[in-house]
Image 1 (cartoon, helix red, strand yellow):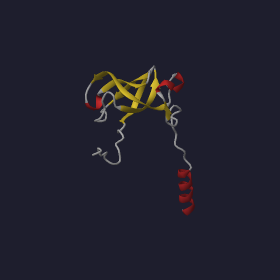
Image 2 (cartoon, rainbow, N blue to C red; image 1 turned 90 degrees about the vertical axis):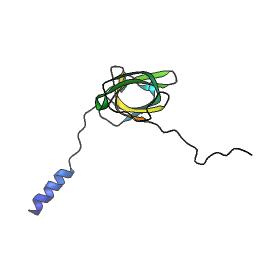
Image 3 (cartoon, rainbow, N blue to C red; image 1 turned 60 degrees about the horizontal axis):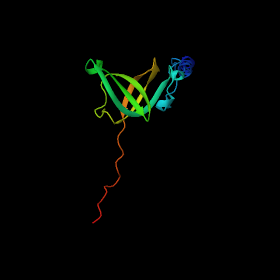
Image 4 (cartoon, helix red, strand yellow; image 1 turned 30 degrees about the horizontal axis):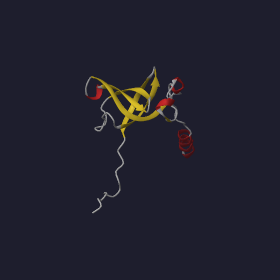
Length: 125
């Protein structure tokens, strides 16, 4: 009986997780690096949130389309669901998603928290 339990434990530990071929490690890229070569890859892209915003639906079924901009480069993003409270134009956005057909299909959207000074600045007397 102990041998059977040991073999079952070894077999369970030997399993490797299976993932779809397009779900490799997340690849952090700049907006100007997103291309057809990025297709079916999980990307992490950061940029300034920009309009125009296209919104349809509501709640968890809401779809919003927006742009991420970095300098002169931009990418169109489609996100489904509820976005962070701080999601606004001109904020820094970070999107994890899959590039396909010229659009970044977001799996997650984050808004970067601005850096605040560690100690309050004092004005000279």
